[in-house]
Length: 370
Image 1: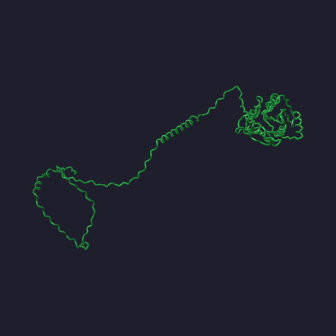
Image 2: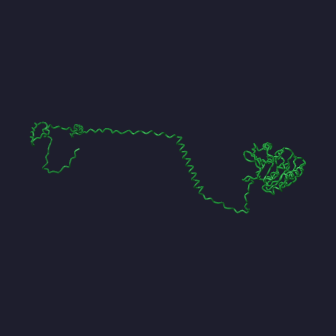
Image 3: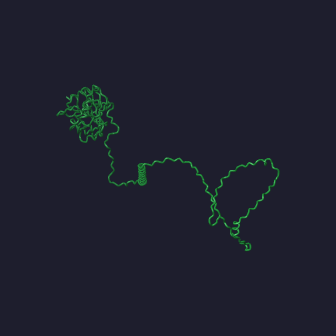
């Protein structure tokens, strides 16, 4: 596109008007061409050998010229239009990017489990926050004491066994065994005791029998119930739950020994006086393990002293046996022979007596038994 400059104002006298008539006539009547005169060359000096050498023209590589296409002018007589073909740019090679494997889709059950776990954790956190803020942070208000007219009472101590085992003997027994009964029945206990009493032991020795059920020792109340020994009412609450059952070995066989520990000695003495006057002989008779019966006519209890300790005894119509009981400190001692009582009291008091003393005492007892 040719931009036309703004016309410069000229004077009217210099204006020449030209028409195309002359040009058309010139084209119709062509004129001969004028001869062109050669231009003379002027030598400048001697020519060197190098100049005489043949001239070698070095080829110069030039970029290809763009192809120019001319199109005929339009009917309006405009100038030809220059058409430049577009330059073809080869595509740029781009390195291939290795494709990564696609991630597998997460299973639906795993998504649901994750959501449920998240909700559970949020609930726990909410409960903990509620407890921390609204429960734990609340101040503890002590209860206001109410005025009472009744004096405060001391707590009652349960009648349980002491933690430390009770020491019933000093140097005795000579032997200890444990019997595990299969059931808490009289038959099971009596059969086990009779089998153990049939075992021969050293003469004048004491063998202690510990009775357990399911690995636990039975109590005083359980033993008396299983042996069918009926005590007076309110008798057992005054005694500890631990007791001693032992066998004294003599020539005629084993003689049982039973030792209880009282909580109050004065109450024990009162109980024994009342029990002796009523049914002591028949109530304690199952301790002999012979299954016999007492005679209908019984003599009253009598006493003898052994090492300064009073002993009450009674004939029960059993060969080489008698019912003896004594109170020493807090112990209530039952024996089924006088010889067994002699051995137990010597151990508890720590005093010994001569054989002659024992023989003379047994002679006096035998006179009463006959």
